[in-house]
Length: 341
Image (cartoon, rainbow, N blue to C red; front, side, top):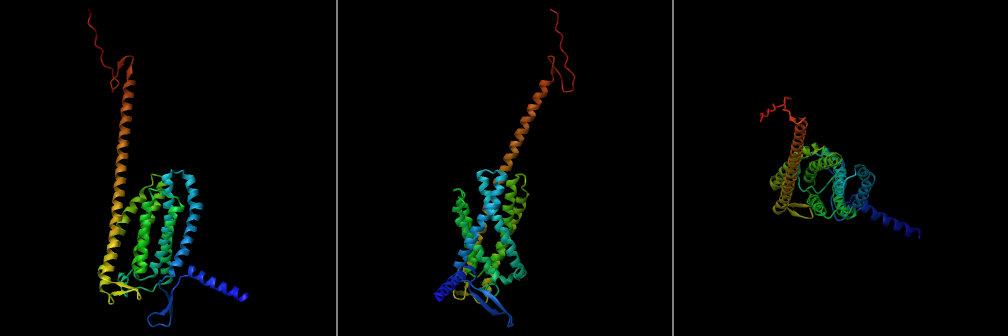
């Protein structure tokens, strides 16, 4: 009985480890040195790990909602529309801040920030450091959890298509970079993008608390355009020039090599189309704000004009004293004498 109990416990622990820990550990040496470094590859067992951390993300989402966002919402007394947007921006601001700090620390430890040629040199990058693989697993887990939150948070029907669209784009791009062994490129493109998104949602949170606080949107607009140009530049360099000139082009699923023309064109096309779509949404957003600003200015002018007219009428009525109308300089007009009959 004791042996069977120990055996079942060991089997259970074995399966639990698959869900919790990062799998596919590979130990190797670098540059013929005696020092051994642990690298990681990806495989089917990563699905179990992603599922576990997706559940963790759901729990953290509920904690942030109940203990932080709901308390702030009660103080602000927002409408239903602003309440939904405030919750969305609050959750995403926490995630973008955490991911940006974590990703920036990874980029700081890597050399391909200073030397962009490392984005395609020695491709395929099938072996990752622990923090790189764990970062990608957490990213995929978070955006998969966001799909379930569309149901749990009871999102308004008109907001579901918009949120579903950008969630699917995140899942497709991050998973694509992970599976195609483009983790370096995906990481260096993800971090500036997260900074821009963090600026937008933080600005929107400040706007909901005080509508006069709109300076953050100006900074966000400048960063948005700059990051779009950076993304296009690095993507064209990597797919159009770098990977096309590497020493081992070819297609091999076993080796994790996807460096063929069709894959490169598909990846570059996906990035370019996504950036074009984002710029289109950005331009429409700016035009909408510009039109709203013009309408407010026109309304202010109309209100000021009506107030001026009312004050002028009030002054004219006040200047009528004892049946004689006074001029603006204080002198009353001469009264014509009636001729004797």
